[in-house]
Image (cartoon, rainbow, N blue to C red; front, side, top):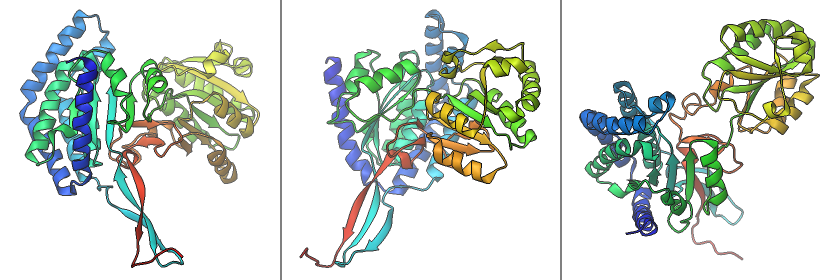
Amino acid sequence: MNVAEYMSELGQKARAASRLMARADTGSKNAALEAMARVLDASREELVAANQKDLENGRANGLDAAMLDRLELTPARIDTMIEGLRQVASLPDPIGGITDMNYRPSGIQIGKMRVPLGVIGIIYESRPNVTVEAASLCLKSGNATILRGGSEAIHSNHAIAACVSQGLTEAGLPAEAVQVVETTDRAAVGELITMPEYVDVIVPRGGKGLIERISNDARVPVIKHLDGICHVYIDDEADKSKAINIAINAKTHRYGTCNTMETLLVNRAVAAEMLPELAEHYAELGVELRGCAATRALLPQVNAASEEDWATEYLAPILAVKVVDNMAEAIEHINRWGSHHTDAIITENYTKARAFLREVDSSSVMVNASTRFADGFEYGLGAEIGISTDKIHARGPVGLEGLTSQKYVVLGDGQIRQ
């Protein structure tokens, strides 16, 4: 069959499985997750053998060292996948919970029940462990999922999918609740994102180009973020020790993550005190600074920043630095140039902190903490399927609850509307 027919068949199976998953009890879902963990543990040799095929193909096709590292399934990464399944099994089940019950004058009770989204299409690149992460979160939240991994990880993803399918079957749940697209034809992505009759939401995980394409072409809702242009603003009433430590950590803890600081904003009143010391630390760690005119007046060795630098997610040891007159200017800069991902203020002034929280339009806004904390695990979600900067029901790290919706429930005792 052609790609369109194949994807339509996957969609039909996923839709049927989603109805069964919506009514699956917590015990069955947890049993499936535990079974998947056992099967993965028993299938280490098969997983490594499949992964070796992908690594060999990747080397032959010229993948760089970073991509090969992301692709590799080491024993430690297999351990992490297994532990992740068990952690998700231990999380509270969000499905079926009823909240906000209240009586109306008519005598009826109104509340909201948490329900699955239905069928979730997930499109991702390189890292085969995403197959397990996505499958586990979708399963626990009562959804069915269609997973389309990168062609470079096709053998690894199929081997993992076989373990997932076996775990579902052992627990008495439909194997079609988690389906991995078997074709490497790129047309499969185009079909997946234009099947609203079968797919309820798309979650892309990958580079900006992939996410932009999906956002532009999809005919179903997309949960996504394009960039992680994160800011730290050091206020004139900041504690110096906190400011230095946070500014260093937010940039250098890891360079290639979406919650890494890309622009540092410093209040003019403390710039002369803060910037030279920060510059020394950054120089020791190999971070290139690009600064505004006021920054370069204090740090002549720094390269000049252009407007493009304020709008760039470097994902590298490069940091844009700007001196601002006050918090209002910092907030204006963040809301103009930021990507609405994660932004932080360092201040000891409670009133300023409250204003920053209100006025910065980002999915995570922090006071006296590193932007690197913007993560599902750090937020206590157990795991995340991605981070959303959209203004829909899921914003920020998307865990189990982000893969659900709510419906109104009404309890009556024979009432009729007069």
